[in-house]
Length: 395
Image 1: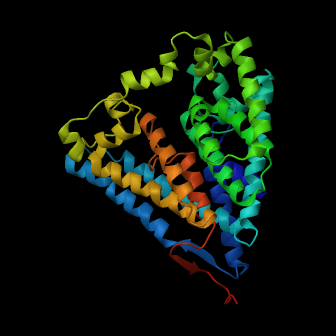
Image 2: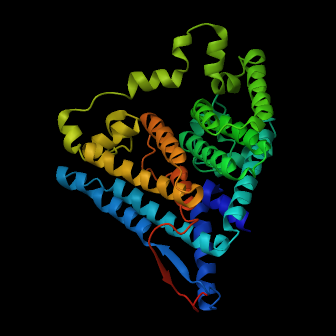
Image 3: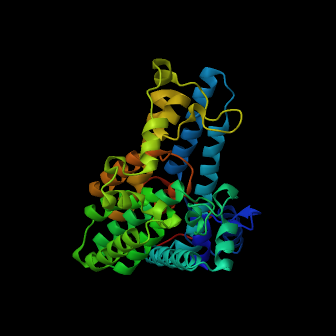
């Protein structure tokens, strides 16, 4: 049961495009938790991380300053962070229902492995062209008809509502976390590294390019067989099926390098990022932003995907720093609770997230990657907690 709700909470698939399963699993956990409180089945009570909640509340309040200064009435950003708070509280409920015991971390790692296997099976079967699996995967994603039957449809072969960039950085952070965990415990089979590389490749080239950083930082010799197998499969498809629309898109950087043509270009997405999404804001925008995150027609203000520029355009360098510090807070909390405050994990994670932020939002963005970090931050005692609904004193 824990693996199922964990999967729903972290991957947040749509159920037949009716409702999002992260909220469904959160509500179920809250109901179960309330029942246990009523039945006095929580002798240790509910531990609320007051400092983490305070950090999220501070982010909500500070995100209002740019719109108030500029008089734009742009409240979409604050609403995003209210969603962050709600998802965090749902995570607290799920943690107390399933993981608040001495083997909680071990159980979570097991559930994360189950999720990896499920996504790998879905991806493999869908790529084999099995119609019911393709339809099932597409039904869990946000409706994106312009990608159906396109060269990027394979990126929707995951059970999630957050395909493309958000799923890529989710898998990237999951890989980085599990490699760090395995460096400490040596309890994860290399087969899960292989499966994660596979589903990460399906999610997009962002994962494919940056997963190398995590592997180098937490390299183990026992990973070599699966790394050689994965690299061999990549080369096999790049050399033998470069015209296949899925292969041509997923492995474009490899195909460009192997063809010895237009090598400097590497990939169309990186060229598009440099040409169309990176520019220098004005002095006024650096100082206080314009107070806009979206345009009236729902597009990103300034027409840029870059997280750095989006946040500067909205609230200036000050707002960008707030989002950066917010992200660092949860990265540090994960490092403290899982890796004894490892600076290697902290610095490498912040580096990866900063590189990703050039391409699109990662700092404080309420996607599934941030939900993963916030949920992982709950597994420990670092920080300021307040106990509620305790039915007896714990010895």
